[in-house]
Structures are given as structure tokens and as C-alpha cells.
Amino acid sequence: MSLRIAITADLHWGHRTGADAVRLLASYLHAEPPDVLVLAGDLGVGLMFGDCLRLFADLPCRKALVPGNHDVWVQADGADYDSLTLYDKQLPHCAERFGFHHLDQGPLLLPDAGLALVGSMNWYDYSWALDELRRRFPTEEHRLHSKRFTRGRHNDANFVRWPLDDVQFTARVVATFARQLQSALATTDKAIVIVHHPPFHGLSFPQQESPLPLDALLWEAFSGNRAMEEVLARHAERIPFAFCGHTHRAREAMLGPIRGYNIGGDYAFKRLLVLNWPEGTVTTHEFGDEASGVA
Image (cartoon, rainbow, N blue to C red):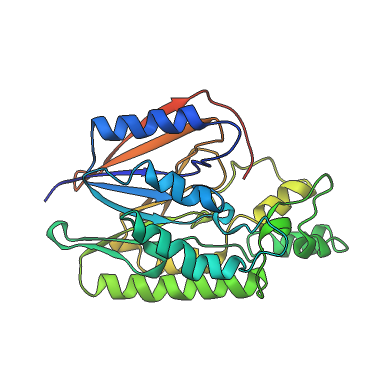
């Protein structure tokens, strides 16, 4: 069975820029509906998460998603929920309401195609940068916990509110992903991985010349983790593709036989990748004006 699987990320619906680009992307999908649509996180914040899903709710195809770090932001002081409640309960309920399969809660099986979509928001535990940070900047490790750069602060420090630290939450989501991947591969031949934060280092920010300055090293720390990469490597022969977002930089990289793609959409500029399965061809569609940005 052949499938057209459309994947996008970082729509940031509700941001002050990018609405026209998102509408163009949605119009394209309505004109040429895929067999499966997957949204790879940072869809909208708070009520805007559901508003984003509403744009695609009437598409006549299977739909799935993973949330991104922006989707678990709690912006209102005194809110009666925290980011963990958003992640565990409210976002899955919202996804179901608009006809989306929430991949963090279980894989989407496509048995007629011999395929499963397995996904996770994924997170960061500093492991991509911790050793180098300790070696080169031994007095700066405190910045990992405050998320404070030399200029400015990572907004996750301001709006992600939960009773966990990054290391604990990363361990939790990677362990869940590993179980779900194992379960999916027990019933189907291949799995395509969809995550928000990059699943292996080659899909993170484009590499600068070494040694990295402090702020660039901190972005490495806040972008992913080695544990997810190790899970993928153990099952690499059965994972033909992995897709992610988050960094707003389009990248392609390999992890063994796994072909990895970072979608690369930005606030004002959106990208959609279409995978033709099982042929394995990937085409790119772009909407809006390209602009640089940060996660």
C-alpha cells in the first residue's frame, strides 16, 4: 500500500507573524489532501493549540501530532493547571476533539502499509553539551538550570512550569518512546519517527566552527539528548525516516541507515515535507517569506 505522508512543524499559530503562511499551507493540503498529516510540535500556545488543529480538522485523511515545548507553556500567573497537566491531559483531549492521534500517548499503526508512526515531544537533558561546558566553562553550569544566556533567557524558563527538572522529564519521555517503539515494531515491519526536539545531533542547529561560544553551547544543551539517539540507533535497521522541528533550521542527516529531516519552518515561513511511502522520496513545499529565527 502506498501513502503520501505530509509532515510540518513550528506553525506557531497565534504568533504575531506567520498566519498567512500557515493559511497557505492549510490551503495546499485541502487542495491536495495527503493520506496522513503529521504536525511535529510548536503548533500554538494555550487556546491557540486547538485553533491550529481546527485549520486541518476537516481534512479527509489520518492525522497525528506531537506537541512542542511552546505547546506546554503556561503563560498566565495563577493558572489552575501546570505544564505537566497540559502535556498529560489537556493537549491529548484537544487532539482527540479535532481528530488527531496524539503520538506521545501511543503509536499510529498503519498495518496495510506495514508501517507505524511513533512519536514524542522529546526534551533536553543537556547531554549534547554538558561535558564540553564543564571542561571549557567550569563556572557556568548554573546557566543550564536558570536557562540564562549571556544575553537574554530561554523562554522555557519563563513558561514551562512543572514539578520536574529537565533531566527527569527527558528520562520519562524517552523511556515512554522506547516502550512504544518496541511495541509498534512487535506488530509491524517499519517505524517512522516523529519528534519535536531533534532526535539525534545531526538534526540540531547547523554546526559552527569549534570551539563553540558559550551561548551556542547552551543552545546545544537545550536542543536534545543522547538517550533518544541511542534508542534510535538500537532499532535503526527498522526506522527508515525520522522527522523533527524546533530549531527552525532545515537540515538533513543520517544516523546509520535512518534518513533524518528537520522541517525547518520559522515564525513567518513554513515548510511542509511530503514523504511518498514506500518509494522513499521526500519533496519540500514552502509557504511565506523566509526569515531567520530561534526556537
